Structures are given as C-alpha cells and as structure tokens.
Image (cartoon, rainbow, N blue to C red):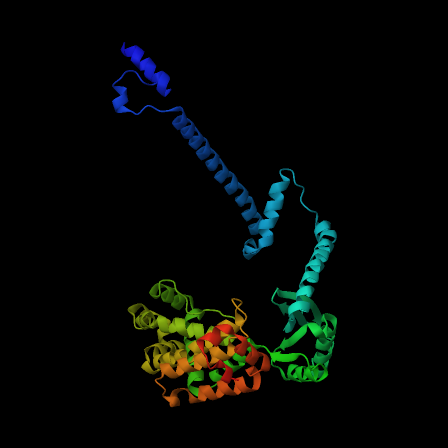
Length: 424
C-alpha cells in the first residue's frame, strides 16, 4: 500500500526518489517545471563559467600583444578598438593577419579615403554653422618646425593639414600667408574665426587677416593667454620666492634615494610633484600637495632618522630643513594657493573639453576675481597687484568681440543675471 502510494506520488510529482508518504513532509515534491528550471540554471551556470574562461583566455592574448609590442594601454578606450574586436569576432576562426605591406600601403590608402568621406560630412556642417580654424606650432624630435592646422565646429575638431615651416622664418607676413591659404581652402564664408597663440607674429597675421577679410575674427588662444597671465603673476616677488623655495625643497628630496624613501614612508607613498598641462599649473598643483603634506614633511625633517642622515649636515640639507620649519614659508604657500586657486579653475575650463568655453570666459574671470576678494575679505592690498596683471592680460588679449557675443547669447547666464544686457 505504501509502495503504491509512493508510486502514485512519483507519478504525480515526477520524483523517483520518494519512498513513502512521510517524505511529503520532509521534502516538497519537484514538479516537471521546477526540474526544467533547475536543469536550465545548471546549464546556464556551466555556460557562463565556460564563457568567462574563454573571454579571459582571449584577453590574455590581447594583453600579451600589447605588452610585447610596447604599446600604451590608452588605445583600449578607443571606440575603434572595440569595433576591431567585433569585426574579428564576427569573422570567426582562421582570420589571417594583415601583412606589413597591406598595413603600410593599401589599407592606409583605404583609411585615407574613408577619412576624406568623413570630412565631406563635416564640410556640410561648416557651411551650415560655420567653423573655427586653429593653428598649433611645435618642434618635433628632428628639430623641425611644424605647424598643425585644425578645424573646429559643433560637429567636433578635425585635423586638416600639417606644414613643415623649417625652411622659412615664421614672420607675421608668412603666418598671414599660410592662414589666408587655409581660409581660402575652407571657404571664407564658412570661417567665423582664426585661433592662434599670442606671439607678435600671429598678432600681426591676425590683424592682416581681418583687414583683408572683415567678416572673420582673429582670436588669441585663451589657454595661452591665461598661461602668460600666470607667468606674470609668478614674477611677483613674494610668489616667485615661494615657488623657488618649494622647487628647491622638492628637488632636494627627489634627488636622493634616502630622502625619497623617507618621504614615501612619512606620506604613505604620496608624491609631492603633480604634473599638469602647463608649467605654472604644475607648480600650483605641487604647492597644493606640498601644503597638504605640511605636517608629514615637518615630522620627516625633525625625525631622528633625518638627524642621523649625513645629508642633514650638508648645506642643501640644512636649507631644506629651514624651509620646512619656517612658518613664513607655509604662510606664503597658503597665500599663493588662495591667489592662484580661482584662476587655475578658469584655466581648467578653457583648456578642457566638457563644454565650449567661449560663452563662459567673461563670467568665470569675474567670478574668479570675486572669489579672491572674498577670500581676503576685500583687503585690496592682498590682491591689487594680481588684479592689475589679470586686467592687463584681459584687456589686451581676452577682451574680444566673440567672447562678448558668447557671453551675451549664453542663455544660462542670461536667466541667472537679468541685467546681462547692460554688460557689454
């Protein structure tokens, strides 16, 4: 009877492990649906584990290629890298690698044609919205003077061409000739402005361009203007002395393995040097880190370990100790950070890519000055020399018609400040 009931239970529940009616109170009978779900889950887990191992194996090959070729790891962030992996995966096994010659000639030519096709789409945007021509001069490893020309529009920035200017002097007239040729190539009706650095030759070139083509503007690079502003501020006696002392301290610490080891021990591995886009921004960030580690540096240069170090008895070691212990040095560092902090924020805006800065330059410069005034409780003697430098650079370089137009047409600022129409 029990066997019959057990069999009946097995028939209904499909569980062959049941042996009697008491088993119903110990374990719930498994239905066919539950069993199917369990089996699918087991298969899925096995498949996922296998997929993870397969992915890990492929990733090891990709990583090994990067390491052996000595290629920087940043290219993995490119969209084209992921597209390459998708293309390889969709082809399947036995994909032959492209030859050296194929990469060097036919594939390169195909990519060039593809890029030209992209450029056609951008040119349509230039006709519709206008564009800016940007010039960037630099010197390569072979000491060649190279000038890059780029075109910026709402659709993005694209490299146009590069010119080797090694064989002639970069006079204002020559720069005008080059820039005028680029404008002609793109079409004057499509160009809103020319952006260059603030060298005297480019100033002359910009003047000549606007005389010949009155419908476009020459605008100096805002980031370069701010960098020159920082250099002027860095020449103020107090700030110059502070930066010089900080550089001396950091250079001494990093010049000796024993002091560098002590530094990392007292700061828990934190470095004092922080690199940035410009030289002065690097100095500012290093000063900021230096001030943050003030307590650790003082403990380091007053520790028994430092006293036992032979460097502590040398002239440079004694000077480094004096700098760290001197209260006036840290007061001057704090003052420099208060002055430079708001202005470095302006540099981050104009040198970043989060949003077009032209419509914000007027506003952020004024806010930076207001912030400095507030920090020093409107004590004019603390910032009057700095404001003279800021105003001088602003009036002769950054005070431009397009910046004013961008400020006036910036709806975000318009609604925050109802009287913006009076700020021209």
